[in-house]
Image (cartoon, rainbow, N blue to C red; front, side, top):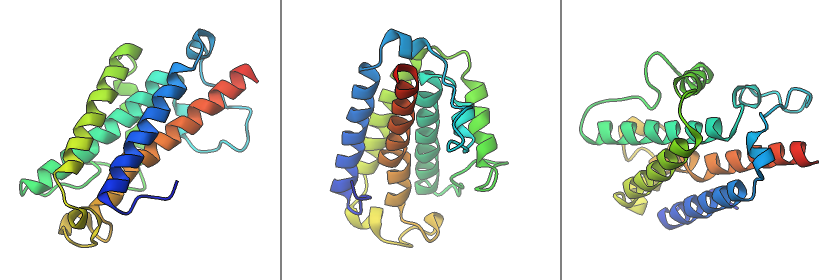
Length: 179
């Protein structure tokens, strides 16, 4: 699927990938769901997230927390309160540490709660997107706080692209468990 460049395509991709994510989750057996993620023997999986996330809850919470980043960033800036996308003390070189902090924060969050949180935050993000026109989402520099990137690009990253990341990760876990 091509990266969305219109509001309609963004909403469709977000919903399609979200539905695919849940179909993937719903197809996971109890064994797969209760087996800890372990990609340590796969040399191709070098990114930190392959070691960080140990189960479905960790993946869902990661998506939820990135929704929260987007929502807070947009709402703050639209209210005239200058905010960066990443909270202090993080930046684009250290956001991996932020992801670990999210992971640590939610180690006692139950799987069912993480599912509820993600479903609610997905709806919140869709409502947020609905508040903007196609032009506001996909015209560069329409908002000074988005820098050289469009608001829509951030929305794509926090929804459809991130859901695709999660789907691939879950499918890799299923394949590893079930060969």
